[in-house]
Length: 367
Ligand code: 9Z3
Image (cartoon, helix red, strand yellow):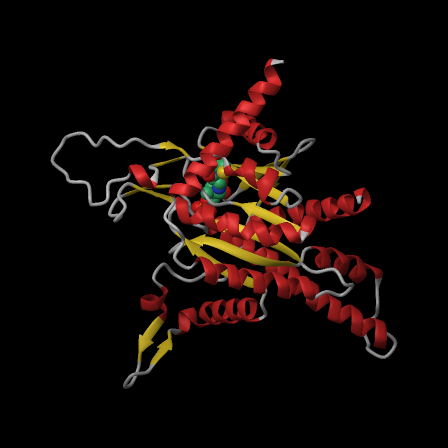
């Protein structure tokens, strides 16, 4: 008899913590604008399809949230994340889609004119590849920390404006030769993704903004069922100062001790899985600095929050390898070291998009 009451109590506690968090959070300034953009994006990508079924849509979260210490914020507690993981993953989610489009066209032409076009015959290998990339094509909602890494801009220097451009005559500027390829690729790929309606970028800074936006995004994502995926790479604050307990003005220095009470941020992963978008495919991340506890903690998160997979990474090796923990698997995913420009996100996205495909197929069978 103890356990059910215990779990009911825990659920009630979580519900009241969640309510308290949202009740006290400063309202999002551009809430209506975000909702409008989101609805348009999801509608657009739900319509476009080859077989009456809309695209897959993934919400990639990226960068760290801040927990402000003052309402007119001068100081805050930050969470480490450069945004590299989220930005790179977004690129690979597109790369698979672009490759798919390229292969589809090749396959289509080969099928129609196979006999006429020398060296472009319809073949089974292309067909299999095509089917794979079809399954990996996503539209991406990129929920990112202001100022963090952006998709398609990773090969630019830290200060692109000052490093890449040089002044010429009059008011004119030009791209320095050393950066012309990188700048052109960044501009062309970024504009192509945004203009084709496949990339929606939404910025946040604080934990209040992040969680309110995640909740807003979940609503229309719930409507597309198992085709929705959450790829939660953002480093989310564990503790925050509730808005109503926060001082309004800048905390004055002078006292030797800064006495601020932070409370635990409610575990929204549970709420996302249980209430906000219960059918979406959910991937969260677990970051540790001690490799001895990493897998245990990832497995704990998998079970506690009922995730479909938890990507476990250690701070110092996070760009080389990650471990994807699922209910019945533990798969180590590594960057291809023989290729200088390969990223661990390449095999990671391949694996996760395959798992998502299997999940969608399973959901169809269960209907
Ligand atoms: C991650 O573990 C990300 O992979 C990194 C990426 C933040 C390490 P970068 O942005 O780094 O490429 O520099 N993100 C999730 C971290 C997190 O806050 N996880 C929570 C936890 O560990 C669960 S939601 O408790």
